[in-house]
Structure formats: C-alpha cells, structure tokens
Length: 329
Image (cartoon, rainbow, N blue to C red; front, top):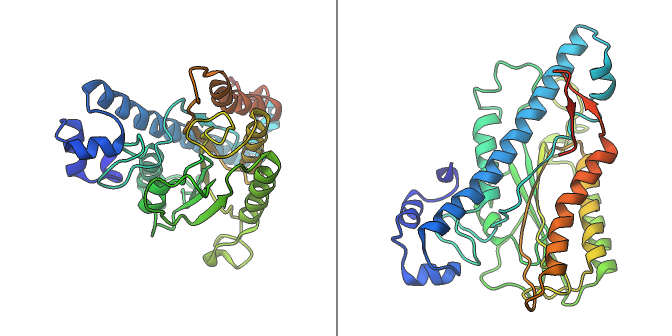
C-alpha cells in the first residue's frame, strides 16, 4: 500500500533504519523500531477506515438496487434510502500526516496516511478496477476531496496529488505557519495571524459553499452522467481535523476557541451530508503551550464525539439489509 504513494527506496530505508541524521532531523523524530510500528499503524488505520467506509457504501447501494428491482418494501427500505446511504463514516484516532512527500518526510510526518488511503481506494474501486466491473449497482469511485483544516498547509498532499484530478486538495491554514516551501493545493486559503472564530467560520463556510456549487469541466452538461443520472462533485471526503488552530496551541498562530472548532467540525459534517459523501476523519496537529493538555485533548475528542452525535441525530436506528441496526459511527 505504501508504494501507491511513496518511493520504494525511501520506504525501505525508513523501515530498515537506513535514514541519514539529516533526514531524521527534518522529520523531527529519532528512528526506532517502535516508531516504525507506530507509523505503519497510523497509515494502515486510515487506509482501513477508508476501505471499510467505501465497501459499506457499496453494500448499501447494492441493497438499494436490489430492493428497487424487486419493488421490495420493508423496514430496511423505510430507513435506508438514497438520502441516508452515504451516512457511513469512518474515523481513525491518529493519522493526518500531511507533511510527507514522495521520497522524504518533514514536520513529524514520514508517510501520508490520507494520500495512501486515497490511492488505495482509487486502485481498488475506480472505474478501471476489476472489483467494480461486475456490479451494476455501484457507481465507481471517481473523485476524492481532502479537506485539510490543520493550522499548517497540507503541503505533502498538495505535492503528491499535484497533477491528479481524481483527488482534489483543499487546505485552509495560517499564512504565517509555513516551515518549508509552500506548495499549491487545488484550493489554498490563507488566514491572518490571530484569526478568530467569526473570521474563520465565515471564510470556511464561503469556500465550502463555493465547492458545493462548483462544476468540473467534464460535467458542465448539467452535472449528469452518461445515463442521465445526477452526479456528485465528489464521491468520498477525507477530513484532516487538526486542532492546532486553537488559541492555546503552542505551534499555531490562530485564535479559535474550543466552541469555534466545534462549529468548524459541524460545517464539514453538514457539507459532507449535503453532498451525500461518505466521510473519513483523521487527526491532525494539536500541541499545548505548557503541561496542561486539557483544551487540546478536548478539541481532539470533540472531533470524534461530534461526528458520532451528528450521525446519531441524522441516522439513528437505521436498519440495513441484514436486519441489523447500524449504530452511528
């Protein structure tokens, strides 16, 4: 899976401890076998979450197709329909390592878990994948969106997907938090030092609304597919949920409150819901100024708790094809 994204020689050298002192210093961690295992777990967890989400989405679409073909009317169809089938979200309490490049790492990032997960999905489930060719109920995975709201630019992912139209990168970050060369995402939004809740949330809402209304060039014919059915802008969304935008963060230079970050999360969750996109959530940055981790841990925790709450409110007690009740998240 790593080789879908990263250079094979770089992977081998990192796994075997053959990195130079300069490379390890640029990453920010000394090499150790324990950290290798942690790194692999971080990447594997996001990839596993993404695959589980997409496979569940496929299963639900197949169930809806089967029910429609047989004009089946039962309790499962009452709850599971085209307006709720996308509400299969996954979350990994790690990852978000968005400063990793093809053949080097920086900023505490060795491999990009989100990039690897996105490439694995495309490799397995895109229109060229044999896994989809025998399933008329499934729309192949065409386009992925990465929403990166860490205080730092998602520079690694921007570079990794620079010419890949199947993965769109959106990074909203502080204008003064670059620690290496600025890369070019498909959409970069810079925020001023000290940006507060009101400015941040107004800006994010504006750009999410713009993306929701955007029509890609190949779909200017009313955003419809060949068979005339409605097409979504994106099929799946990754959310890098860094909380280093918090005013108590040691490395960030923005001034969001805990409540402001919660409102940020809600904007992303509602955006994914409106676009009917499955969502995969990962962590990001978050570093306390002193020894008190309370505010940072609370902000990290809220990302996951609030996603669970969102699903519980929008998709409670849904019965699916096997007769089981699906809990939120």
